[in-house]
Image 1 (spheres, rainbow, N blue to C red):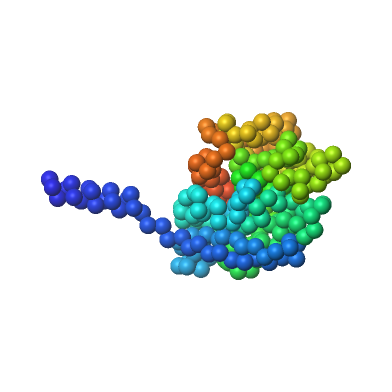
Image 2 (cartoon, helix red, strand yellow):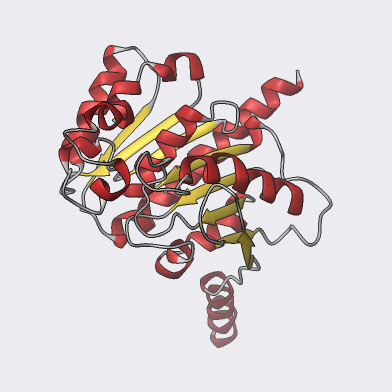
Amino acid sequence: MIKKQNIALACLFCVSFYSYSYDIKRVEIASDNIDKKLHATVVLPDSYSKEDKNYSTVYLLHGWSGNDQNWTEKTQVASLADDYQLILVMPDGDYDKWYIDSPVLAKSNYEKYIGSDVPSYIDKNFRTIAAKDGRAITGLSMGGFGALNIVLNYPGTFGAAGSISGGVDPRDYPKNWGLEKVFGDPVSNAKFWNEKAIINNAHQFINLNIPIFIECGVDDFFIEPNRKLHQRLLDLRIKHTYQEGPGGHTWDYWDNAIKYQLLFMKNALEKEQAKNKV
């Protein structure tokens, strides 16, 4: 009886302490589109060093005041690279630049940087599926807005897009989070603010025709703009996944949410890859 118990405990120990073998690298990606050299954190799945194959890549954008290391430092996202066999790329959006090409700040073209320069570097330096159906993009808060904004402006780059707790309509918060610094004055530059509101560009998803996953916590201060965007997509009959869950604008919420976002991205990309092989 004692031997059986010991065996059972040993098995439980092995299950509880499964060893992940992902590899985290930090690379520097320079660009003429921005005024500084920034890093990106790259997570390679455990099989990357063992198998000679190319991998789907998901780009994860950080929120306001963050950097490229936020995701791996504050969540368990790195282990998901092993679970889902994906390359994860977390570029630096420079604290508060909102992933746009700023009309008022020189060399603050983070839309171009993330939409073009970063994928180009990653595809050249890692074994990726270097095509639209091999890349997806999502992010949290400022990064949720950034992911949707970038995919709309780089329709040939990403095959799926998402947003977690996204600040999808910056017009609602003109005096917050450094928005005015990069968008310009909300009155004299109102045209640009209107053009960048995701809800005003939602119709572009019709022709883009990619899987979309938007979610937000019910206690999040961004919940209403997300609900309005969801309704706009419904009105336009644009197929998408929308989800609300208990929680607010917190890392606990994002740590849980990213599991489902990455599974969604993995399945969406694999489906497109299979379709394109036929």
